Length: 227
Image (cartoon, rainbow, N blue to C red; front, top):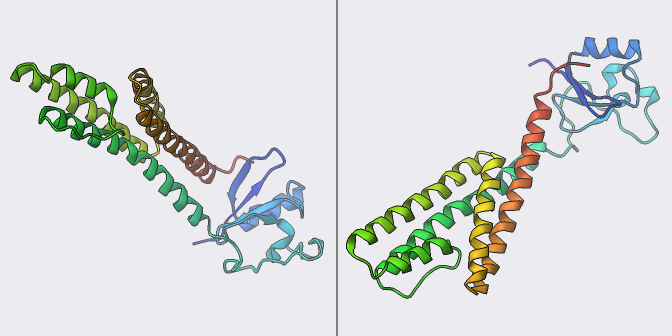
């Protein structure tokens, strides 16, 4: 694969990819200087143009800065793949909370209708209230309640699927609904449940930030040569 370059313009935007010939032409035209930040496709970090020996600007390189060889990656450059992998881990870890909310809410519903006194505080309060109201009703009412519980859980599963695929809207809408459930939990005076709601919302917020960072990096790498 041919080596290409990207540069960071004075406006803070990335331009490229460009071939070596294009970059040399930009140098002659004064669009690129020795101090211009450049990243080469076989390296993983930005460096001044003077650091690239193939551009013939090594003499202008600031004292103490090492020139980058014309071929081969720099051994001292941190892998951006590591950063992307960490962001991906955060996104999926945060998005998986929607699965936990859905699953534990269903378990709580089953516990209510089975007469068990056990339950999980991470689950939804709205479904628990609905289940308790219909607990003493006939079989049809219980069936309706279980159908509603499954539908509500399914909505949160959908949020989890799209959140793990880096859709910010899934995080935002799911968080808003969970905030509403937290307010209901507060009205019931279930403060331990409120604390867990806050923790889950914080974890989801971490996922929002990681998703936005990954999407930004993806857009940046897909930028075309419009310089």
